[in-house]
Structure formats: C-alpha cells, structure tokens
Amino acid sequence: MSRYENHKLEDKEIPFIYKQDTVLPTKGVPRSSNWHENIEIVYVIGGSGIVSNNGHPIYVEKGDVVVINANHLHSLSAIDETLLYRYLIVDRSFCLANCIDSSALSFETHIKDHKLQEIMEELHSAYTTDESRYRSLSVRSAVLRIMTLLCNTYSVPLRESLSPDRTVSYVKQAITYIRASFDKDFSLDDVADFVGVNKCYLSREFHKYTGYPFVAYVNLTRCKMACRLLAKERLSISHVGQRCGFPNRSYFAKCFKRYIGVLPAEYRRNIFENG
Image (cartoon, rainbow, N blue to C red):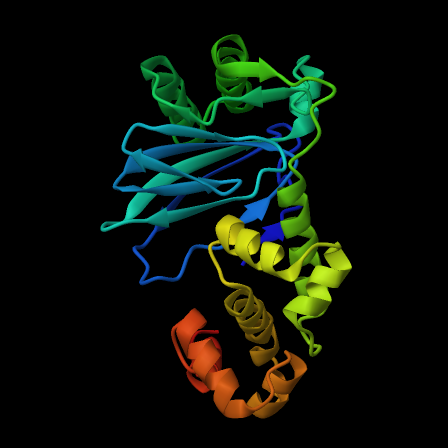
C-alpha cells in the first residue's frame, strides 16, 4: 500500500529517523510504497533486492546506498533471500539549517562509495554504542558529513523550469482518492475522472509505480484498514468487512488471507492472545 508519510521526530536534538529493518522474499505481493518530503538514505547490509524509485527498479546488494529524493514514490522488495538494510531519514529543517535546500537538489539514486559506507557505519556506531553526553553531536556530525559528501559528489541542481513528473502526481492523486474512499463503492472510472486522465493510462501507470494492479491495491488498502477495526472486539467480522468496502464476508476473507496472510478471525484472535 502506498501512502504519504508524515514523519514524527522523537528527539529534537537528533532531527533524524534511523532504523534497521528487513524485507522477506514475497510471492508476487510487492512491499508497501510511500513518499515524503524528507531525504531518505537506504544502506544495504545484507542480501539483495529491488528498490523501486518513481517506477524505476534498482537492483541492490550488500554495500549499496540508495538515496530517495524528496517526494519520490518508493518501495523495497527482496528477491530470493532476506534483504537487510538500515535507513536514515533526514528532516528537511536540518538540511535548510545547514544551507542544503533538498527541494532544489536532486541526488543520484544508486551509489557505490566506500567513503559513504564508512560514514554510514560511523553513524550506526554513534546511534547504537555511543553513551556519552555528546552522542547527539556525534550523530549530527555523521549525518552532516553524509549530506556534504552527497552534495559535493552526487547532486544535480534542479532547473527552475523543470516541472514535476506528471505521471507520479496522477498516481499520488489516485492513491489519495482510494485511501479517502476505501469504505465506498467506486471503480477505476471514478478514480480516473477524479484525476482527470484516461482510465487505461491510469491503470497502466498505477501498476508501474505502485507494483499493484488497481483492484489489488484497492483490496490491500481495505484490508489494512480492516486490521485496525479488527482490534475492536465489539465489531463483528462481517461488519468490519462491510465497513471497509467488501461486498460480502467470503470475499473479505479471501482478500484478507491473500494480503495479510491469515483469515480475519485468526488475525483478531492473535491480537487478543498476544495483547
């Protein structure tokens, strides 16, 4: 499922989000995709996979760095083995405070650079092992060196006349419509009319940029929303399905099993047994 991410910073002294994550190989079901205004730096530390960036697939392996530019629609998927990676999201305010206007720069996406790898490892050490009173200073210093290297070596100024990719804008509008109307009955024609493009064009580009056919994406969105409602014990499973736009319980169960991995009743049971 694709979505706009509004990042919440937990520590004002460290205006970044830094985490380690994994992606398991999937059987034809792509990973969720998203976009945000902040720069994201993905550092692969194990396995191999595909990073989809504005519809362009990038093969990555251990040691690779991928820079996700502001507002680029992106997702990660593993191939035959688990993809292990760390990601750094740099708040735009930090960039501006250090004379880096991320909205006026476009960074190269796929980077193989030993110096950049070294700084990424230093950043990880600062985050995970530094317990001194200057930990935040160490983290900020490492991030600033990363951004400086990117600006000096891998940046391309954007021409003011260069308009944003219209196709990406159309796909984002379609995503917004679907997420706002998941509980209603609508069709590809309705979404195409809302966006203002031909439905065949939208269907083709939507699949290209999100990795999902239109109907599959709609059903996945509804299943994700159903997960929230299933946590409310007073709602029956049939009612949850109806609230999320599924025409009947059997179709709800079929879709939920495909995209979430278990039946709705089992998902609910796991919530309350492990809660």
